[in-house]
Image 1 (spheres, helix red, strand yellow):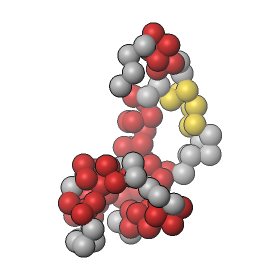
Image 2 (spheres, helix red, strand yellow):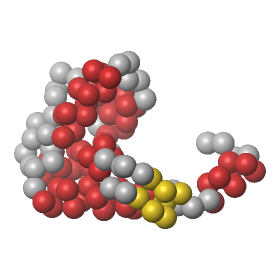
Image 3 (tube, helix red, strand yellow):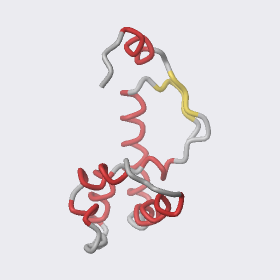
Image 4 (tube, one colour):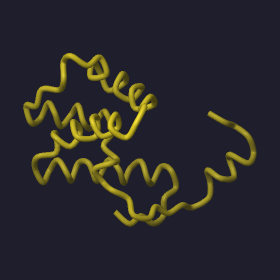
Amino acid sequence: MCKSTFHSFLQELPKCEHHMHLEGSLSPEVLFTLAKRNNITLPQDDAAFQSPETLLARYDRFTSLDDFLHYYYIGMSVLISDSDFEDLAMDYFRHAAADGVAHAEV
């Protein structure tokens, strides 16, 4: 991670997120947790789904919108119950607060 003075200055500024799609914030960790809770089998023929870490690494290598949407829709398949969405929201709020987000339109 960058450790410059300017980076530190930017990190400390309060931030806002406009028009944030909650389901787009689904982290690999939460995806795996919800899949287990809801007895959903993740694709076994895709090495990205070996662990949250391998899925996160795959997120850095999308090649097209279709590639992104493929993984996005798999993620959406684990969101079943109200408590799933509650857990997703709380995970987003924790990360947003850690990043200095003072206002979010979710």
